Image (tube, rainbow, N blue to C red; front, side, top):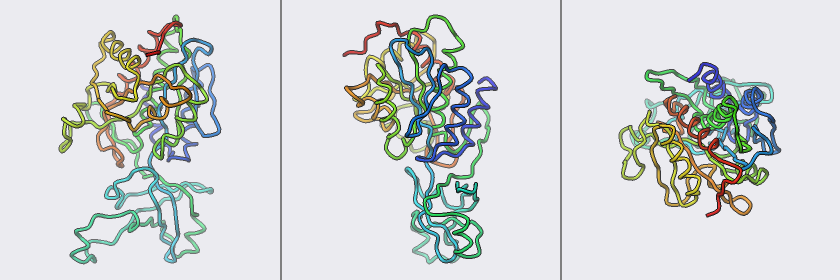
Length: 354
């Protein structure tokens, strides 16, 4: 991966942006887009748009959600301990002992997630899994009054985890689900911009919001854009770790390239076009099947207005919804190259009617 793109990816990963409070991460994305897009803007939901070749046909939406799972403050008790709920789907076991960054009106407040130590648990307690309602955030306050000066109900938080570079081009970080997708759609737009030539399509990369709490941002963005076709980009489970049955989830190890989705809600026209582009460009890929919904922005986009022809490209990801998700950088590059190749193949007469 080129150095400038890698630096942008790491800036995205380091910037907090839980669902509903994505503004900081969105600013990073928009600033990068201004270097090559013809138009960069936001909307009232917080979605970000970067357009290439405005007025071209067909209009193609590239969607990657920029929000991450996080926490939200629900109560400060009399000891000054901060109670919270999850924003998005957490396995509470991975939260125990984590450091957090709470986003407040006065800046970042750091804390740690605590629970009763094993030494003072009863035998039966030790056998039980942790629940979020039994955890708290300790911000170091001496009492409730001090804690309530530091944070207030409704403040959001993310885990305090920076990216870690590992061998074989692998990267571990929080928020790869799905800053990776927001990165890929903008990287695909950059590739199209730098290649120049006769690009027929108007291409709009969108960093959508609120995916982790209901694919809401993509719904609003797609309605406003009314594209002819769309490609959603997200992560999928890398299946090269213990305990993931390949007969259920397919075979998508790290390093195997983009994962092209085939599902009841996806357009076979777009899907076959993506497969043809991968084979034409010599980009390794795997296929993933879903019998109904995909759990991604694609589920909202394809239902917009009178229906939008939608495809799905995913990247293998280990340890999803954890503090240390893991991807391989070559897979991210492959996703961006695949999408750019497919979009470039479209002409003004491209027909997505089935």
